[in-house]
Length: 245
Ligand code: PXP
Image (cartoon, rainbow, N blue to C red; front, side, top):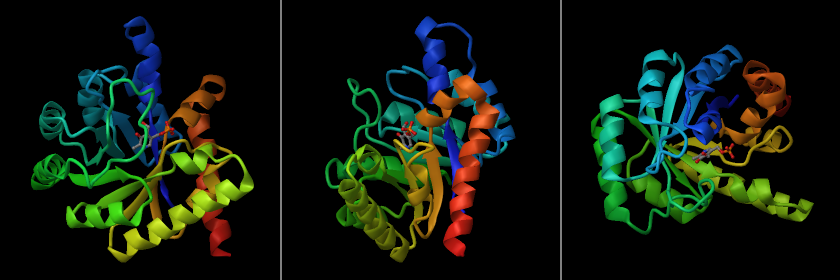
């Protein structure tokens, strides 16, 4: 059964809309844990548009499940990660003008800078995951970097509208998953996953972690974070039971 990492960035997005103290993502993390989250994920962006340094420092002290820091390869951010020492860092591409992460890291471009970032994190004993598109060439490049895991970008699957497109994108994820598992990489997935589309992804053999943010935080406005996490966790767990029948 895949573990559920809950991305709480958007709690901080609401707080930053007023540059005030509430809602506090640290509270959100505690409630997500109560709802059954296996991990808490935050993205400390270079422009600090939502999560702040203070949040990551406090989360490191308070989170009892896995703390996963999403981050760019910028030296300043890598320095910060090495100071905080989260259990896992997921390296993502970052563009200032984007609304959210668009596409996976291109490991064939900027490979020297990516390698330097990955090596610094690995040398410090942090588990490293690379957020990449579900392409065999990217998985091969990730393997060459000696990372622990790849997080396959599920955005194209999530955005697919027709059933043909959904099937095609699911097939791409399946093929890339097999490639990652053959190379003994841990298999994570995330981006754009919702209560409606998560089940086929959770059923992919070997997937060990799903990172889900927007859909859970959106639902939590109406049902509370604990319940929203519990509902997602039930869906992810249920699919695991079905696939074993
Ligand atoms: N995984 C990665 C690497 C991401 O960058 C994000 C978005 O911050 C997510 C998962 C979660 O995506 P969503 O908010 O669409 O669930």
